[in-house]
Length: 113
Length: 117
Image (spheres, one colour):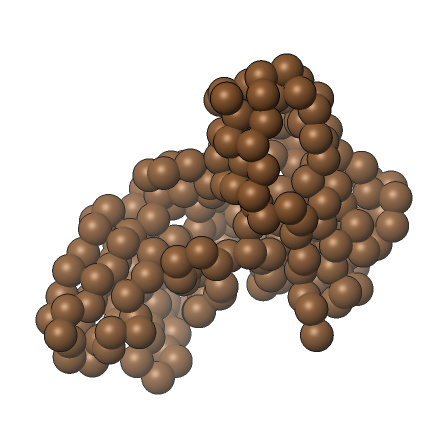
């Protein structure tokens, strides 16, 4: 089955700096790569996703890049703000996989004033 | 719009007891899922359902059972609670048009924290 590794497990940045979280996956059949944000006491919420037919996708301060050859994808957050502080999860899913996402172990992002 | 609603939010069980975690969604989604979240381990899929009457095992199904009698409801049953089942449980739902195979956005409930002593 799919195995997703995520790094780092914790990340502390100063407000206004950029943050980068990296994930690798093992199953070459995976073609859908979402990122979820989980705030304290809440369920995860989708913030951005990318499919394997594109290499990069942006949404305001958030971007995701995908390298299918190397089997890795990354989340980039620019101009970080205190409200970006949360746990971020990457995930991967293959076509025809029954929507079964395999999640990474999460990154605790702390944006310090 | 309520989205995905889970009950209870907190529960303490004794070893060997049974209980059901309730989950309901009002978005008419075809897919529903149960995940458990342990510290530093991410989310692990327990069971999922692609529609009413159809369920299948995920990565960690042992010790759990599910049913999907309606589109809206997807309860998770723990028959003989064990300390290893202490965790936070999340129910989620998503919509995938038939025949596309494309994974849709998962909408999560707020979680149910279960402690087995």
